[in-house]
Length: 378
Ligand code: SF4
Image (cartoon, rainbow, N blue to C red; front, side):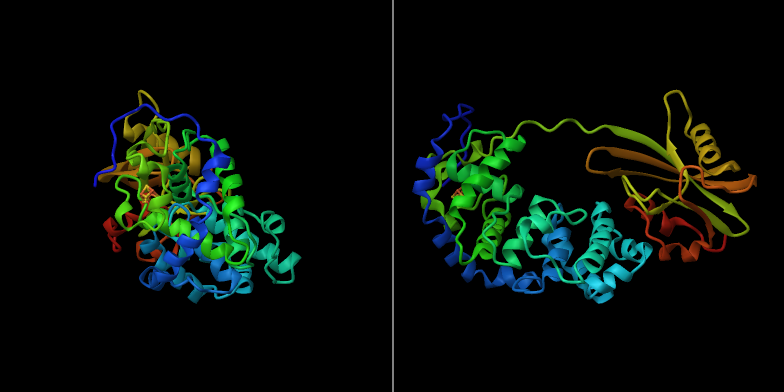
């Protein structure tokens, strides 16, 4: 049965207390369903894991990233850094290299910093209380809730995008889920529903339900364990929820980078440790300003960033890449070194590297796409 409705007329804000009384059996139904999902659990190597370190790594990797993508990264990460001590002792280059390709690199830098804090301030033992976990670098409400409930059995609800969608449909919530207040509302509501004996499983069940059943466009209501309790389903209005205002349009920037050759090596620079793609290596270049040709912009950027003068050669490639808040159209040229001594002006380090050795460094995704195009013997 189709559950979509074209009606844009939303119902009045429901009386939450009344709604909640209707769904007190939510936990019971969800947990019974969760216990039957052996296929789902098998696909996630961290499921059933008791070690807070492993749960932490998996939860951080899962933010903004599909389960199928995370599985290999998770395994590889634990091979390199099997515990909090090994992560704390690793150098940042190694950490970023193992994370390379997973995106949102701040997560990797924060894992590294937080591991060092756990070793120095907590004697290598993971702190157990929600409020203490939340003080670790990079640990926000989501990660602290997931860790304290899954690893330490504390009744703290997790509210991610999947959970918000389920909650909104269960209650026919008229509040915009992009509004931070809606998240607080959901958290307060779920706090009343989360069972004391299995809080971690309850949270994971809700997240699984959102990810695998209550999907954004086509919720699989016919297999949903909470169908009878669901307001949106019962009113034939699943298409109306969650209420979500339009996202702002993302800007697109024109970027140019240069592969500068000198004596068979190419120049790479390391981005500052904080901010977008912090600590990663990249080819020099930058934004093409209004009125500039890509070639002129590249000469200017290379001069500003490295102090070098170069001659622009042939265009190597053009590619597009989307980051969270903007997109880039990137043009890449081969350049020949002319004069000057390379000095880092916009980066923390510059290095001349043989093309065949570039894969030892961690690069952002857009730069990674350039690497296979370089001729090692140039
Ligand atoms: S019944 Fe449908 S809309 Fe309601 S929670 Fe289940 S999958 Fe989502």
